[in-house]
Image 1 (tube, rainbow, N blue to C red):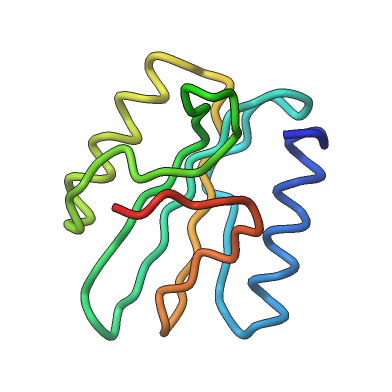
Image 2: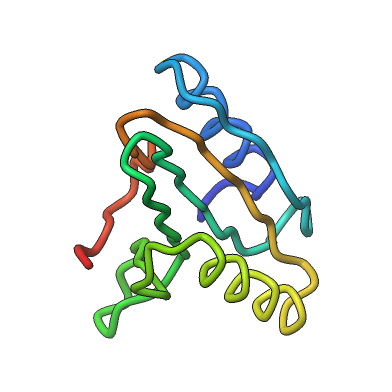
Length: 110
Protein backbone atom coordinates (compact mmCIF):
# COMPACT_ATOMS: atom_id res chain seq x y z
CA UNK A 1 0.00 0.00 0.00
CA UNK A 2 1.17 3.50 -0.74
CA UNK A 3 -0.93 5.01 2.05
CA UNK A 4 -0.55 4.31 5.74
CA UNK A 5 -2.81 1.46 6.78
CA UNK A 6 -5.09 3.57 8.97
CA UNK A 7 -5.85 5.97 6.10
CA UNK A 8 -6.35 3.11 3.63
CA UNK A 9 -8.74 1.32 6.01
CA UNK A 10 -10.66 4.57 6.58
CA UNK A 11 -11.16 4.94 2.83
CA UNK A 12 -12.35 1.33 2.52
CA UNK A 13 -14.83 1.85 5.36
CA UNK A 14 -16.14 5.03 3.71
CA UNK A 15 -16.62 3.32 0.30
CA UNK A 16 -18.52 0.46 1.92
CA UNK A 17 -20.72 2.76 4.02
CA UNK A 18 -21.58 4.95 1.03
CA UNK A 19 -22.71 1.85 -0.87
CA UNK A 20 -25.02 0.74 1.95
CA UNK A 21 -22.82 -1.99 3.45
CA UNK A 22 -21.97 -2.37 7.13
CA UNK A 23 -18.18 -2.27 7.65
CA UNK A 24 -16.41 -2.50 10.98
CA UNK A 25 -12.79 -2.55 12.08
CA UNK A 26 -12.63 -5.69 14.22
CA UNK A 27 -8.96 -5.31 15.07
CA UNK A 28 -6.58 -2.40 14.70
CA UNK A 29 -2.98 -3.16 13.93
CA UNK A 30 0.01 -0.97 13.23
CA UNK A 31 -1.29 2.37 11.93
CA UNK A 32 1.52 2.87 9.43
CA UNK A 33 2.34 -0.50 7.98
CA UNK A 34 0.04 -3.18 9.38
CA UNK A 35 -1.19 -5.84 6.98
CA UNK A 36 -4.96 -6.11 6.43
CA UNK A 37 -7.30 -9.08 6.35
CA UNK A 38 -10.72 -8.31 4.89
CA UNK A 39 -13.64 -10.57 5.78
CA UNK A 40 -16.75 -10.16 3.61
CA UNK A 41 -20.06 -11.52 4.88
CA UNK A 42 -23.04 -12.17 2.62
CA UNK A 43 -25.71 -13.28 5.08
CA UNK A 44 -28.36 -13.65 2.36
CA UNK A 45 -26.34 -16.43 0.72
CA UNK A 46 -24.71 -17.62 3.92
CA UNK A 47 -21.18 -17.16 2.56
CA UNK A 48 -18.06 -15.54 3.90
CA UNK A 49 -14.90 -14.70 1.98
CA UNK A 50 -11.51 -13.63 3.24
CA UNK A 51 -9.04 -11.45 1.36
CA UNK A 52 -5.42 -10.62 2.14
CA UNK A 53 -2.74 -8.54 0.52
CA UNK A 54 -0.13 -10.37 -1.51
CA UNK A 55 2.70 -9.76 -3.94
CA UNK A 56 2.77 -11.71 -7.20
CA UNK A 57 5.99 -13.12 -8.62
CA UNK A 58 6.21 -10.12 -10.97
CA UNK A 59 6.13 -7.74 -7.98
CA UNK A 60 2.56 -6.54 -8.50
CA UNK A 61 0.50 -5.88 -5.36
CA UNK A 62 -2.80 -7.75 -5.38
CA UNK A 63 -5.50 -9.09 -3.08
CA UNK A 64 -6.18 -12.81 -2.92
CA UNK A 65 -8.20 -15.33 -0.95
CA UNK A 66 -5.76 -17.06 1.42
CA UNK A 67 -8.32 -19.67 2.48
CA UNK A 68 -10.75 -21.20 0.00
CA UNK A 69 -13.45 -21.99 2.54
CA UNK A 70 -16.65 -19.95 2.65
CA UNK A 71 -17.44 -21.14 6.17
CA UNK A 72 -17.10 -18.34 8.70
CA UNK A 73 -15.67 -20.61 11.40
CA UNK A 74 -12.84 -21.74 9.09
CA UNK A 75 -11.99 -18.17 8.16
CA UNK A 76 -12.10 -17.02 11.79
CA UNK A 77 -9.61 -19.77 12.64
CA UNK A 78 -7.35 -18.54 9.82
CA UNK A 79 -7.58 -14.99 11.17
CA UNK A 80 -6.65 -16.12 14.68
CA UNK A 81 -3.58 -17.95 13.35
CA UNK A 82 -2.58 -14.87 11.33
CA UNK A 83 -2.86 -12.65 14.42
CA UNK A 84 -0.59 -14.99 16.40
CA UNK A 85 2.01 -14.74 13.62
CA UNK A 86 1.64 -10.98 13.02
CA UNK A 87 0.30 -8.97 15.98
CA UNK A 88 0.29 -5.78 13.85
CA UNK A 89 -2.42 -7.09 11.51
CA UNK A 90 -5.72 -5.29 10.93
CA UNK A 91 -9.03 -7.16 10.53
CA UNK A 92 -11.92 -5.46 8.74
CA UNK A 93 -15.35 -7.04 8.29
CA UNK A 94 -17.88 -5.91 5.72
CA UNK A 95 -21.44 -7.20 5.92
CA UNK A 96 -22.94 -6.62 2.47
CA UNK A 97 -26.12 -8.07 0.99
CA UNK A 98 -24.35 -8.46 -2.37
CA UNK A 99 -21.06 -9.80 -0.98
CA UNK A 100 -18.99 -6.91 -2.37
CA UNK A 101 -15.45 -6.39 -1.09
CA UNK A 102 -15.07 -2.70 -2.08
CA UNK A 103 -11.38 -3.14 -2.90
CA UNK A 104 -10.10 -0.87 -5.66
CA UNK A 105 -6.84 -2.78 -6.03
CA UNK A 106 -6.55 -5.87 -8.28
CA UNK A 107 -8.19 -9.01 -6.83
CA UNK A 108 -7.04 -12.43 -8.01
CA UNK A 109 -9.93 -14.79 -8.73
CA UNK A 110 -10.38 -17.76 -6.45
